[in-house]
Length: 297
Image 1: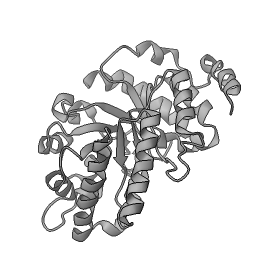
Image 2: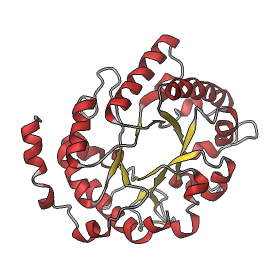
Image 3: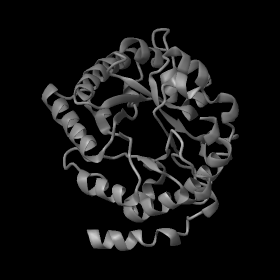
Image 4: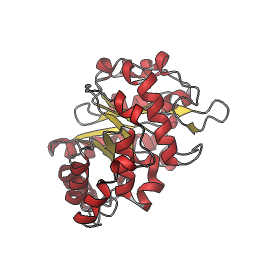
């Protein structure tokens, strides 16, 4: 889509079918922008990223966590970093962090690791991301030796990213709360990585699903280091993802103190199991969030 087509598309902002005036009226100037991890609407982003962003903006989302950066061709959703940044600027939205496939670098050569990380750094700088996030650990590394390799790679990658003036964070899953040599995986990461190079992104859904620690207990393990949050809900029966307000996570009870966490940004997320479709779920989640959760942060 060229510049003219984008501006024409932007003019349709207030006629979006996902517009909700009541939600827009609830948006106030607060310390934290309301964010969405774009993986939540990955089908819509693959189909038409610009129209998707327009609709999400109308729902009240102000910042987006990216995913799927093409490090070889340096593209976000088919756009160059500068072009995608221009689209975000024209919509008056931002992107504070992104999930990058640095998890693919566990056993590559030193030279390939540096080239890949440097491409991610270049993209993040051009786009305006402040954080590069390590998204998930492949199941074959869910072992003691796997975590030993992981902490080595996190320190190596994190040091390079930090020296480039960006932040680097590790995103937890439930396997991070399993024991490896009588120590939780997350404790391997907290205790064995340099806190200056490796920050943390807490995913509350996976913390709650693991059942090993409460979010508040996790934050206490490394105060000030949990810079990014993922906020999502868990189906009461299946324990799958669900829209905020449809599940079992009571954020009034479990949400940690943002100042103790060191919070810089949060993102609503839903990885699947949509009630109708991903965009309707994004609308339902922000509606519930604005009324019942935002004021708690």
